[in-house]
Amino acid sequence: MPEKRLTLNSEKRKAIADVFQTHFELNSPKYELHKKAIADYNQARTDMKVMAETVVRYHQPQEDVDTIRSMIAKYNRSGGELYEDNCFYFTAPPRMDTDYEGNPKETIDEEHVKFDLSQDFARSYYRDEIKAKGLNPDFHVALDNNYDKRSPSYYTMESQVNKFTGHETSSNDNKTTMSYRDEWEKDFQLTTIGSSYCHSRMFAVDQDTFKLFKSFNSLKENVIMAHQQLYSHVNSKMEKLKLGLKSYRYFDQAKSLADKLGIALNEGILNESSSMALSVYSPENLASLLEDKVEQTREEKIAIARAVMQQQQSVN
Image (cartoon, rainbow, N blue to C red):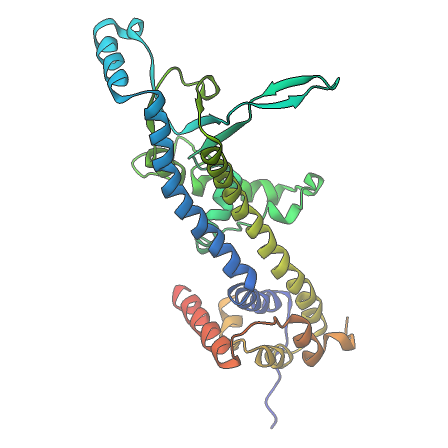
């Protein structure tokens, strides 16, 4: 008797889509660009911490800090103010500009540099770690700034991701474990003379140094932008794939598509997870829509995909 074909349902299609999505992400050139953006930021962060400390200590020498600390020990708050900070304002040399009436005026440009971990940046920087936790690091990117699309599931995921990165806490949290946010707060702090109000302290630098601090902020934005581009690239593929999967009734159709793309797909993933029959979504045509122009060989793609599948199966 001929072997019975395995029929697909919505749950099985989702399990199959997850395998394809993992493959698309790991083989996407946008994934490598995202990793490079993080690496570039990390290198610049190391350099900028040294530069920030050099600038701050030039304007506020250590001996002045020590003097105020001794005065505080003797006179309490009357002795002065010191604050441990990772937030700084740097100013460029004055330049001539014009006001709204066309009159000449002197302008001083400012650059706000923070060595903390903001929410949006955390979701991009720790994207892989968030995914490994079973959470969705792309929930906010998917809105594409259309906040009318926010649903109850959006706020649920926002809360879960924020708790993971340390941007949301509760009385039940383990206070002995440092979150990512806590680690960044402790990573770099300078003793500054003055209050906790960051904008009250302006550190003048030369034009070249100002440009370096400005470039550092751009590298942080590049991490967020690379995350957005990765999501858009993979999501465009997934939209085509999901339409195609809806037209597939049997597992062997999805398997045929996976084989053409070098994706390791077997029936085991269906056991682990609990008509638009348009010709464009045949395995042959859909494969051509989903392929990337990358330099990896088919054998390399298969090896990577199989390694990912084995890792997923070992976790499950």
